Length: 202
Image (cartoon, rainbow, N blue to C red; front, side):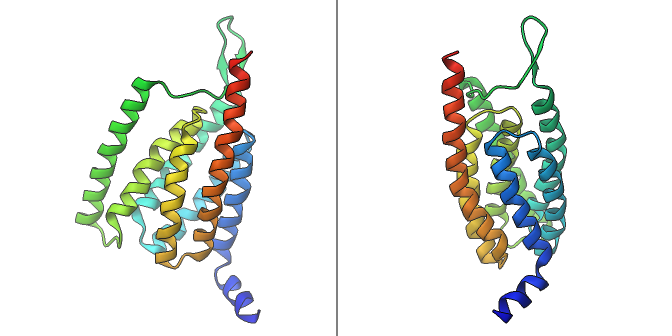
């Protein structure tokens, strides 16, 4: 018990960031606009954590998260304009086939570019795995901001792979966080799917 307390006190910053991740995912599932504020605080903390762990692609991803969080906050707060010009809440929607193709192409390009950059210019331990999760996360975050339901399917892959990476890197609180995020991404997909079906029946 004493060892656990000592370990937590020595890693309190990462523990707090991981706990904020749990808060964020529950708000995300409920489509609560305050998700984005919690996300801003959490990703700011993880920028520091990933720099120390030499996960540079993940660090750059947090900077992107920081920017997209303000974009998502605006979209979720103000929604979209209806045909009559009224402001309406942004609904859950599905990704069209042409957009899916574009997102796949963007993901592949990002994967090869980030992987090459990390392998060539940094001392990253896992350049291609780091690049894989980063490229998918770039796309998934944009999809989340637009409330495209398939963002959850992408997050399931990202979170599961990330959990393994963080175990390898010794970032155990973050590994635990991403294990639960994988499970919660399945819950989130099912929750948003119900909203999508309810909206289609209106």
